[in-house]
Length: 243
Image (tube, rainbow, N blue to C red; front, side):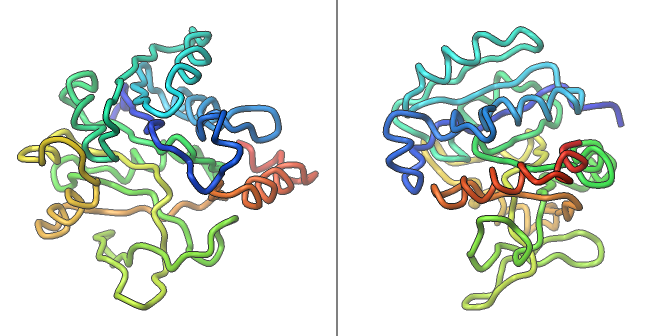
C-alpha cells in the first residue's frame, strides 16, 4: 500500500498531570532536549510520507498555532474546539479535513523512537483496509518509560485486540499512535466523546487490531516522566535509537 497522506495530531488537552509546566505551555509544546513533542511527531509523520497534518487545539491553542505556522515543510491545518470534544469528538469534528482514505492519528504528547525500521512504515505493512477499522500501536506495559499503569489491551495471534481484564495487568498499553479508517466514525455520537466508544464497536465487529512497537516509547505525563525521557535521550547510545 502506498503511504498515507493525511494525519491528525490530538493537541487540545489540558495536560493536567504536567502542571505547573502546562499552566503556560500546552503539553504538545513541552520540549525534550530542546525540541517540542509536537514537532517530533510531525517529523515522524513526514518521514512516513504524510503530506497534510490536522491539529486540533483548545487549551492555549494560540501558542500551538503560532509555533506551527513557522513550519513550511508540509501542510498544517487547524481544527478549533470550543468546548473541548475529547478524542473521538475531536477527530469527528475534523473528519472533513482528513479525506476519504485511512489516516494516522497521534496524541500530541506522544514520544517514540523507531525500532528495526520506521515505525509508521511497519504500521502500514500491517494495515489491511479490508478488515481493519483501526490499527493501534501497542507497547509492552512493563517496558514503557514513565508509565506505571495496568495496560490497556490483550492481542491474539491474528492481531485482534481485547480489553484488559478488570483488576489485572495486561501485556500491552496503547501508545497514542494509530491508523483509522473514516468508516469507523459512521454513526458516531454527536459532540464530545472518547475514541473508546468506537474501539468497543470495532471490537464487537472484529475490526480492532494492534501492532506491537519494537522501539522505545515514553509516557511524558508528569514532570518526573519528562526528566526520565530526557535522561534516556542523553545516553551515548540513544542516538542509534533516534532513527
